[in-house]
Image 1 (spheres, one colour):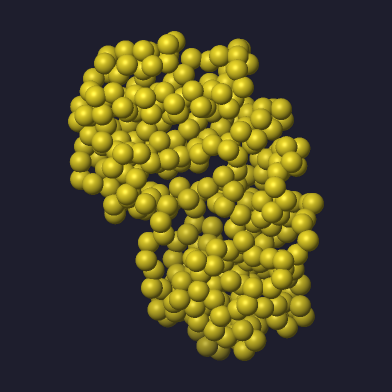
Image 2: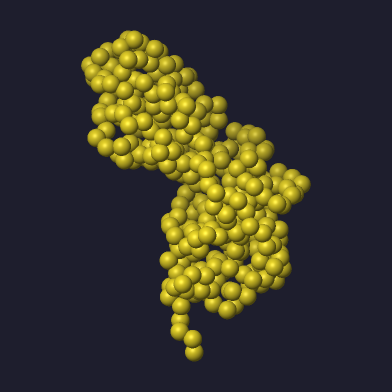
Length: 367
């Protein structure tokens, strides 16, 4: 039941929420799997059918519900209200990625998780802080899912804020000269060259540890792949000329590099936010053949990795969270109420989109 000193749920929504709690009343440490289907959803607001399989990682969640049996593989991309809520910012690109996955013969299990990402969505509220709400739903964790990658990017940024050593930080970009060769060969050439660069004595003394992000572009005129490796690293001063010569010696034809010091730690977080989920350019999305090649190749190569001393930072590790969350209803319940003009539900949906605490409107005076 979602209430606060400044406002509360109107009586109809309150009654529905009370019914929801009677049918699935349980508190969770961390997030849990979705509660079972209940009378409120089926009688008042037809909810999105809950898939018979969940892609939620059982190691991340502590639930009192049994996992239901797995369902048959799906052949259609989900565009239910719940999925649209999660993926609205990249609907067109999602459809293109889905088509590329189908064309390249993606593993059926991964295909199903991608299709159902965002389904079975329920709203949870922090028991000790009613202004904190979040959505629990199926997540595919596919590297082509911009919603899941956005969450991964925010997790990395959060961990960097707390785990990054207090040393000088620099930003490095390495570029390979384009060749008429398959994308997989180009990426392997880039990664092999980067490993060789870090083994050089003078470079190794300057580059202690960091995180690297792959970026793919397609030349408008040449029609060839242009690959870049963006690295956030810590260490001593790295001479630009020395770096360029070393890179050219390793690659045989590439010398374009860029290295600059980052003045403030928060700027480093900004670079992570920018590049952590920016694997391919917009032009690749608009060419089905290029997108198919990228989907196939990047399924076998990492687009982000740590190196050196940063390997022990565990940037993908979720921080400890002792918050107890309680389910207060389905996402569709609040979406339906918000569409009808319910102010608290509108506030909740706005908070979920922005990941901010709920700012409930003031309660109306009695009478």
